[in-house]
Length: 188
Image 1 (cartoon, rainbow, N blue to C red):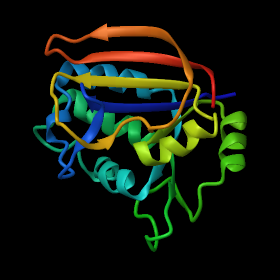
Image 2 (image 1 turned 180 degrees about the vertical axis):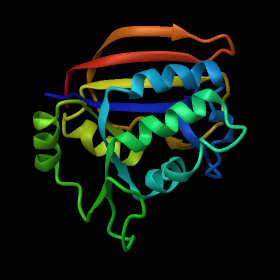
Image 3 (image 1 turned 90 degrees about the vertical axis):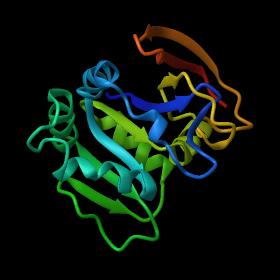
Image 4 (image 1 turned 45 degrees about the horizontal axis):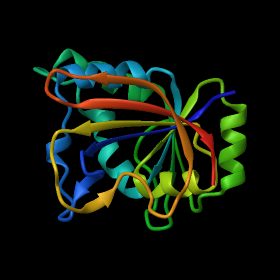
């Protein structure tokens, strides 16, 4: 049985994008990228909303061209090896292999997908993750907190949700990014 894992790169004040939708401040350096790559190796399926899929599909054809770093090439291979499920009512279709489109986010179907999985399932994007967190489906939360305040925007975690977490691991990177891994103890 897999675990449903939510990971986000966020500002110290808890946003994945600022109020203008920018997230250039969140680009991981090589040390953080290598750590993320190792964390993602256990992912067998990515669950995305439309916006996160639009960002992540870059890795289907990018990241491994001439002059790309070793960690970028590695991540492209990790991403391509996993299945993807995109939840969207607005897009006509998907453009990457190993990807299927679902029109609605069916909580029971996601629960069964995770239960039947041989590997972890990653839920990407705070909007989709908020639904899974509220439904009590998320097992682990990984936050990469960047040493920047953006003052508002798209929050990494939903408001109005109460859940007890257990700190499983923490790691500080040389550029000031801090990784916090929490396991969800009680939900709802």
